[in-house]
Length: 288
Ligand code: ATR
Image (cartoon, rainbow, N blue to C red):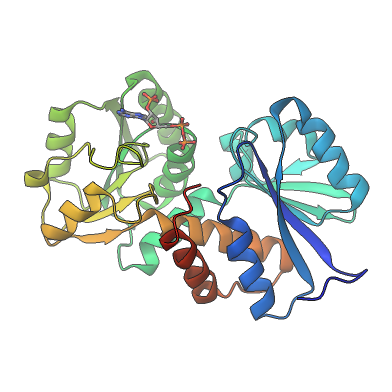
């Protein structure tokens, strides 16, 4: 790719950032579509977030992905955020439109798309979501619109209850929150169609851990794990062995990236090119 005076700059900000998979995914997509864009990674300390966003304006950086620990804090530096980002109080994508900085959150829609594209549509289904952290909240917001019923279980039960209350008031749907105990998972799974692990349990270096006992898994269940390192978590291995449909965390990563790409370029993301780039990199040992 030839960098010229017209090349548009996009990037990702976070701390740490060394292991990010976003540059490989977006640069492959830009190259494939012959778009005059480049994507870089910037390590930005929490204390320097304001300066970084000022720099985005000053330098005319076209788009940013925002990752840990800046997703919530970045909101106050933007001119406008969309309704999803506003509800979540969290932004993962920024577009510089003629000097106005617009914030979006594509995490939840990414997860939803990963489910749908893999034949696991949650529409009208009973969904069990494990976790109530940042990623879980974004997924819950997307799921609550589409699912028939949503149950959220979290280690700190008050976070799950608060999220469930907020979602049921917002969407007028049945959303229930509770404590993530082994018995609650077992009970809830009995009549669930879709299970999503949105906790960090099972992530390297604790890849042997899972919140779900293998004997609770069934062939008619769809199981998604947002953990992508390892690519196949213990939960997914056991779900596959039980005959369930499984969707790995790389799927959510891919589709949230594809949605960000579309925000910046206004053209359809070449999803298969991005998937290949992502899986190649994951296979080569990247972890973040
Ligand atoms: P992210 O932005 O990736 O969602 P996060 O906001 O820190 O990260 O959320 C991590 C999620 O994993 C939370 O739901 C957390 O539960 P708590 O809210 O109780 O902390 C969950 N989690 C992390 N370690 C866990 C463990 N050992 N058992 C169960 N849940 C765990």
